[in-house]
Image (cartoon, rainbow, N blue to C red; front, top):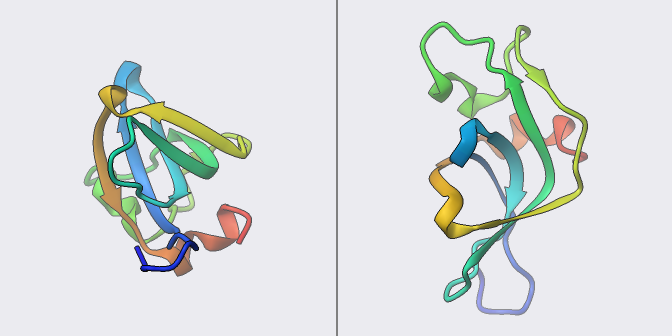
Length: 96
């Protein structure tokens, strides 16, 4: 994150409780109990043959994404993992 007031948004895959897997643009804010995901989409079907990490470079042709949810806020207690992903390869799927 930069020192000015404009956050750096990065594409991440978020694994959350109850089996939800999101891909979104996110700006991490220290000291908050909430993770805010912008242009968030649930990854309904991974479409991978070697696990979720294959999606860090963008969706595969077999990947199914739900419609964009705009902003989603998750309590950090519901977050299992955050996986950094390729901004450029995901941008057209996340409104970028």
